[in-house]
Image 1 (cartoon, one colour):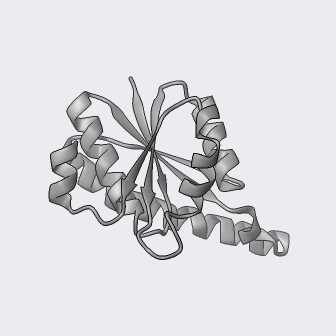
Image 2 (spheres, rainbow, N blue to C red):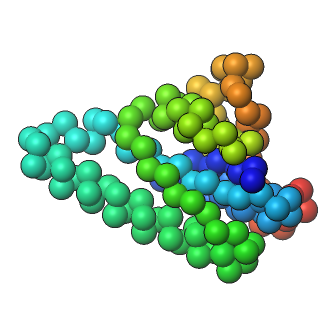
Length: 151
C-alpha cells in the first residue's frame, strides 16, 4: 500500500499537512504514516534525567498523535501509523523514507509568517532532486474547504 508520510511537530502548519495527507489517502486508497522526531539536544542531561525527559517526550507525542488519529479515523476512515525517531529532523525523515518502501509521498506544511516556509521545507526542497519520493508542500493558510476541494 502506498503511504503519505507527514511530520508531526509543534508547528501550526502541521495541521494542514495532516489534513491534506488524510484526505488524499482517503480518496486514493492509501495510508498515512505520521513521523515524529525527538531532537537529541532535548536529552543532554544526566542519564536518569535524560531518560525521564525522553519518556515524557514520547508521551506528549502519543497524546498529540491521538488527536490527529481520531480525526483521521472518524472523518477520513484512515487508521494512521505513528513512527517516533530520535535525531536530527532531515536525516531522520530521509532514513524513514529509505526504511519504508511503501512511502510514496512526503507531505510538509509551509509556514505563512515572515520567517519563510519553515526549516523542514527549506532544507528538504534544497535537495528535492535527490529525494526518492515527491514532496507535497501544503500552504499553512488554506482553509478546510480549500483542502477538500484540492484533495
